[in-house]
Length: 458
Image (cartoon, rainbow, N blue to C red; front, side):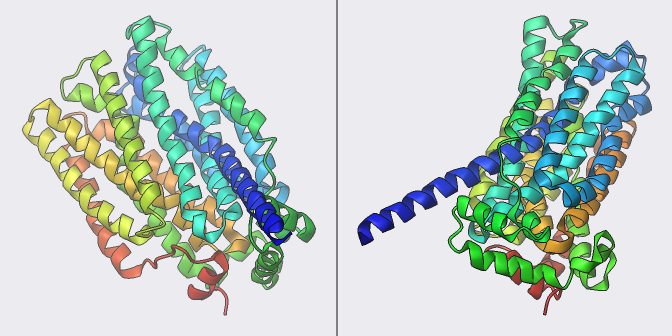
């Protein structure tokens, strides 16, 4: 009987792990669409410039129109996520992704395109908050880094899928086909529909359930996920929320949250000051600046996407072994080297293949450090009671800086990309010293214990 019970227990844990992983992957579909929506524009910028007679500044605004939407999504999603739950908000975001994809594909003029890109941006901003928050809250401490990294992996897979679909559309229809850009945008509707249906199948976050006073359902969800002691974990979550429940949304402004907020804000800021989105949004443009033709630039973009994917998988293997801080420090070093190489290439007009090496270095550095760490560590640093609103604030900062980078990069790089890449190299040097001095390591520590170490709880 003891052997049979042990076998049943192992089977239940195995089923729980499967449910946990499936739920994380479904939530991370929001991140897949985030990545797809981010990168798909790179294949259309030259056509849109010619079609609508856009200046460099207007082209930058076309790219950043979606990012303006991300500000609204990131800033406003925290409160609905706290009121209605993580799962319903993920479903709404899926609807917005779908509407944006179809609207962009059938846009009748530049202003319509801007509007539907903005709608997609709202979904991206919301998903950048809710998907990693949900995964953080369902994951046990020993698997949290890996599971939240699934969110980043899906962003990267989405970016690669966008690059590849752009290349495929150009290959099938021809790079100069007048409807190619519409197909590039419209393809996103298919994964958006899958996300919409799948989001209806996942359970609610147990930490959100405890916060709303639903202990019994929280225990059931934790047990379903294969957590070994769901009752004890619910008690710990409830204890961590007890003294903070009365603060509501405004409790984010309490002094005791200053340290985790500043640390989260620091990581969020450098997530954009590493220059990754200058590369992601303008990959094809950068390669054309280096001498590639339109089809060649799209193919080289796929190479960058593959690099991004490979390095992200490496980060998933390392994040719970070497830790978040070590990855950030190593990434800072390779970032400085890669940006310096890119600045040198554009300053000296060196051979085009060196541009590919530099871009692979920049994207790879982001993938195994900032890209893999940012969504994990922000949600680890922020306490349970303010995680949704605090994550929304951090993501607002990310997208605000992203607008600045994406809007100004075409203007700064009009003559040469050297000053822009030189600036990013300096920023990564600053990141190295700030992370070394101030950021704690968070791997393998429960969220409740981490709050105590940061001085939020005694």
